[in-house]
Amino acid sequence: MPVTVRVVNSSHEELVSFVATKYRWFTDMAEEAGYDMPVSCCSGACTVCACRVLEWHDIVDPAAVSVPLLDVDDDQVLSCVGGVDETAIDSGEDRVIVLQSLL
Ligand code: FES
Image 1 (cartoon, rainbow, N blue to C red):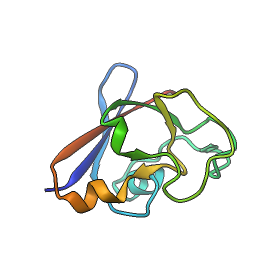
Image 2: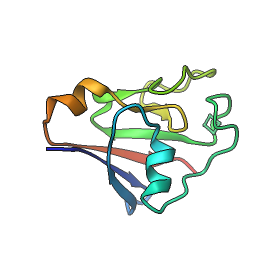
Image 3: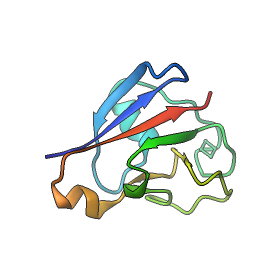
């Protein structure tokens, strides 16, 4: 079973949903699914892409593709560098990560 990612807005309305793959960052997977998440630096050096992780924070890897250059709140992830922990994908357990866009 896959790890699915749902991106929602401040009203919890779904913006996009996709099945996560290893070694990819959230904004890239969302773009492939047809939704452009807000980005600026694309390198973890601003907070434009920051999302609050509403569900399954423990399987979000904040440095899936590169180490963020800024710290964010503990319940947030920079979606241009963060992704899903590869062990969670390998486990085959069905989980749905919910990211809330902050813009
Ligand atoms: S776009 Fe700047 S940190 Fe992600």
